[in-house]
Length: 497
Image (cartoon, rainbow, N blue to C red; front, side, top):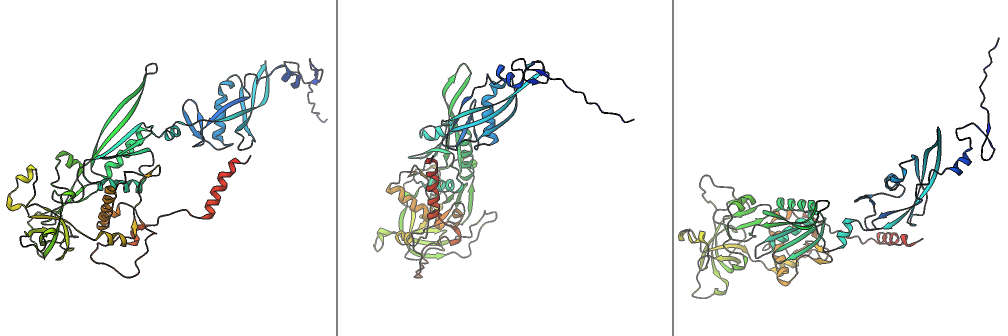
């Protein structure tokens, strides 16, 4: 005999509201009548508001965060659902998705599907569309950037020196490493530059950069702005005062050769070099005997190179770039006079000097110096003069220069009041760059497209060697017409509805 599979059947009942035949359920109602009697979306608002920063396109996430999210992305969906989270505590969220809206309508529609047990063992599922209106609101970072005078932390860079060459060098380092990109403002002052930041950590990072590239030290201070006694919170403004060593290139201690992350000194009498670290300088600070403003122009009468200079055992590192020479000088305004007093000097510039050249030197024999260390020296150990540098024709030197330096520009203005004296100091800084290959390695120099290349073969050996083409970078300018048209069309698209 064959067995018969008998499937049980479920009897139908009539809906107590409309009479439609349905399978039995605890409510004895069809799904249509059940939805009409019970609305599980009652506590969910159909209109909400979210805020977006119009400058950085980030959305506000309560209580104080801002998140970047693209349209119809999972990040934006999470932001919208967090807005609805307090309303979904009594229902179960099963699905959520975006409903398409026009990109510039400032509207975002999200369709959510929820479930809820309305009667015993009776679960009702419904879908609802929530419309979010996007309002514009500046985030904290953009508000601080728009408020030019707002800052949370300030880095005050100071150097008590007559010349700004070290600050010019710092400017080039900032441009090369983009260390100032987080600044909300830059303000020049007579003795340095003030850098303003929106966050304390950004200022600390900037100070750490300064400590690695220049011999300096810093002091930290904070000022209480406000205090919330209920939440016990404090709002401070932070100040970092960075002091650079008061030594510049061409200062006479022995003779300052350069100031980078260390102070490099050279002894003109024996070519010995020494690097003074910042920690050693601040532990035992010293003063310069004179600066560039105290130098006098001299005329070279005779140059006697020193080929075999005997050094004592235990001497330090000796410069290979320079050459020793004995030089006899006379003041430029006393050339040809019968009562002119020739001065003797030993110099490290023997490879550059010839009779008839002009040099800048410090007249030690006829100077009036107020320095305890200098007063304690024996007269026999004091030279007649110390030659600092050779004088070149600045006009010809500028005309032959095929490179340039970029400047730190803030709000369309060059940082530092570009007066005639400051411009003259900057020209002197460029001449130092031209003469020092080690300094050129640490900064960016650019080809000057406005200068025509020298094709007449007029190479003047009397001038220092110019930077090579390999050292120069191309000064990129985006003048492509296609790029301009693309940028203009991109600006016009948001205006088309």
